[in-house]
Image 1 (cartoon, rainbow, N blue to C red):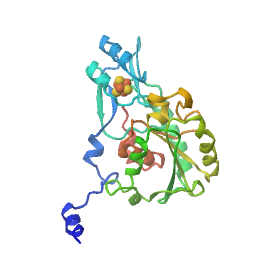
Image 2: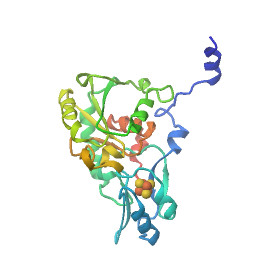
Image 3: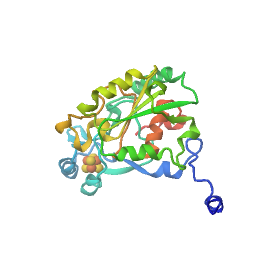
Length: 264
Ligand code: SF4
């Protein structure tokens, strides 16, 4: 059994997060940030024009970037490095779609606190055994790979008492990826209806937030916000496993307190 000494020599690979800090969680660039939101420079305008998903807005109020649209192509970083940069860290999930917009305040802290309070009341009954039903509403498969990674030994989501289930009747969280195509409208609604209350909805990836780069078209998919109420939005294209894990724990009010207070 050569895998025994191999395993022992590898040591423990599973992340300690959220119990303890994890370098990868804290440093991996999972989103783009606006470093000079009040400077509507020519470079920022050029980057807005080059952005393939129209995620950047430059006007008299300054510069903003919608992470729900951003597909992380990094084009804006090379055109306007003084305006945009990769943000370090995986804590990118938000409790409202508007809060995904970086560089401009579309959602104030009081509104977010109220959203969190309401969510806490709903998830109070969900203790340490939480089941997730995942529905792909039309994606390129990349977000699904990252969702699957939550089951590997590095992230090992089971250690947190969180499991995936094939049956919506056993599920507490509805995790949705994909653009929300017309064809998936009814299956998604039926899955939601089959789940026992309280149902928590987590939308994962730029596709689910806005339709991403393939939004619209013959599928009519412009994100899942129009199809059901979403509690947590996780940006990324694809969203990283740590970002997804953060979003799930944010929905369950299990993100460490100091991280909940940190805002862009
Ligand atoms: S990184 Fe995001 S915001 Fe920047 S150009 Fe690409 S899609 Fe647009």
